[in-house]
Length: 564
Image 1 (tube, rainbow, N blue to C red):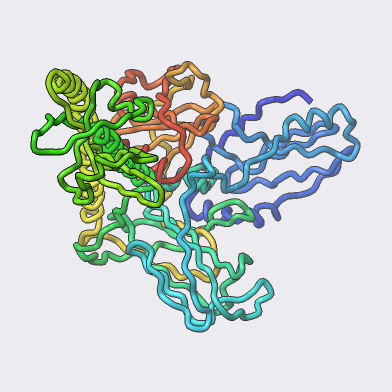
Image 2 (tube, rainbow, N blue to C red):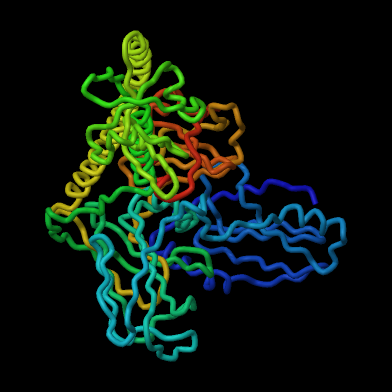
């Protein structure tokens, strides 16, 4: 079947709030339909309601039914194909065409980068006693006996509560939780005051909240307004269900309340690498120190000296010296002059760890003696030894200075990184303290089933500029098949533009945007890039700058926070 575009316009009469409210229930709308029979299929056609009519396109084999008059902000083809239903008489050819239209859809909740999803914090709760859990500044109060199995039977023992919150555009993006809301045929993006996700498990098996029991959550928001609604995510029908006006109150938060400013995993890794560099530099210094030459000593008339036939291959440090004599070391009291009058059967020489002395061992029969000796020189041999020593000492000193410089560089880099991290922590702490003032808002929720809850205000798409985009990166790679995520600094939301849709933004706002490449790299379009756009309509080439591959939520947060 040839694809044809279907354009549906709203009726000429403007809907009232009462009419909108009346038709929010899809099941009620569905009941207003009448059934008509054709020779190949049964088609439901809607009655007229609220000044709107539906358009029905029927062929002999395929029926496409569009319910409601949906006003959409772009005339481009939606990324999600319309549903196509075949009749019982559809032949194999049309079936193949239908199959080409229906692509496998993503899961309803689909984190763009699975490894960078917002992590849960896990708490252990005794079912018999319940308890109060603390997540940052939020509190989760669980009553005693709150949980049951899937049949409603009470359970005993410990239950794992998995809990997480979402407070900014980075959180919303990372979670993959849909942040759009449809109302009266218009699609909105949620501008959030905070969202939470709470789950319960026992031995990895899902548990449920007992009928008549409720979990009380007091969630501290980073937003200062109170005009929000409360919604629950219906993952079965794949939409947000309006619950009520939000129950938010201005609550004082102690000035001492601080967000956890511990180092991120990436920061810890960087610090550890710098510490390892310092240790490595110290080890190299130790090795260099072992090469420090010993200054030659002149023969003294009041000290005993003797010759030792040394194999210079075994003692390369002595190879450059000729006519080396040996003298007993003053620190060793084991040497006796009469040893010189004995013809020994065996003798051995071993260099000591101090690098200055040697242990000389002599044997004859069962008699054996060991004592420390060191080389000495006389006459011109001493002058030759001094020249060799000076040469070796210069080499040693140069190597030592280089190792000391390496160590100092490693220490400086370590100190700079620690200072940088402390500055980031201080700035983060200051932001937290600034938001946790007397004007901070706490939202109170009573939850009778596990799931995702949102305190939100539906927000229309930005306006002021609407461009037909061509997306590439700074490597000239085509990015037109990727979602484009837009963030406005004065709105706590993230606007997602699917491939093929126009990009709308407010030039008067501070904007930045990003994409995820097929390699899970973040490609950025900065606020400065937006400032360089000097048109509000027509086609435009967006060139995004590829940053780095993201492998964790910390990676993502650290990368995007500077642009928030």
